[in-house]
Length: 368
Image 1 (cartoon, rainbow, N blue to C red):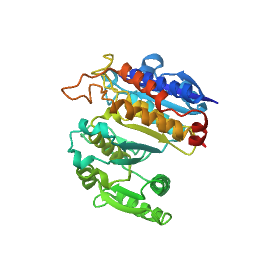
Image 2 (tube, helix red, strand yellow):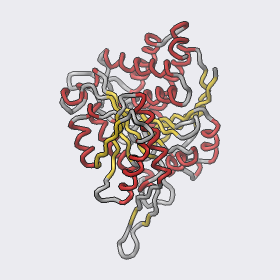
Image 3 (cartoon, helix red, strand yellow):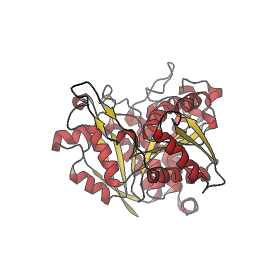
Image 4 (cartoon, rainbow, N blue to C red):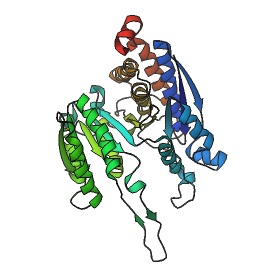
């Protein structure tokens, strides 16, 4: 079967890690007998330089026609003026809006090989396996705003509707029902009116899922518990801003932002898959970026947009196999270890797929 994939390398280390993601995707095709047609198009700062727009019309049109989108990273000091009329980040926000992507899934799974890379104590983090479900198209990032006026006043507005909260809450509860049956909903209901609406609405949605247990946590308490006892969490449901911050904090559990994948989903089949990390312009071009977050995003792409669950499992096992063998990029390596580069890590994971990939009868059993 042939699948159409749009690759948006973006800026900074984006092209470097996206290249390894496509490499692993092609290795999946070889191992499982699929064909992936990949087209590369600009977004972010690169697109601004080429076309004047952070999301050219051609890019958005191709993404709408694709089965899935793989994104590298966007932004950099060349386009860093936050008051500029055109900024790379606008391309990502417009892409999410243009594809109707309102749910961002950020899994945080700690493999045994990653325990040593974390700055946290092993006894606190071993067994961590959680998913942050972040609302993606509402909240303070999309509310009314004003840059500083002559009186030195600026504001951003956090706004949510019941329908926006209901649809993201249902995704979290459905996901929890397939996992351990726990949802922790994050808000600041002791201060914010929008959070009080969030809490009431999530509680109403919980009545539709009697087998899932709901707890409400204030965001400051959640930030503390996430590092103190991450294993208590199963599915974390959060508004846009809080989910953004908590998912970056969660990278310390696995030792590096370079390890975390994400999936941005809506009502349709097509989603955008990208690592949680940014464009890291300080190391761009050095060949040392960790591509694992992008490669694990390929796994999410296979699972959520293409329905290839066995293939997604194989990607995750290949990553575990390479880490278990002791290979580390610079962000994960201990002082006694010699790190490998971006390309070599991608090569080793692609090669490992041939060891963990399923063929013949095993493929049929795993995928349907």
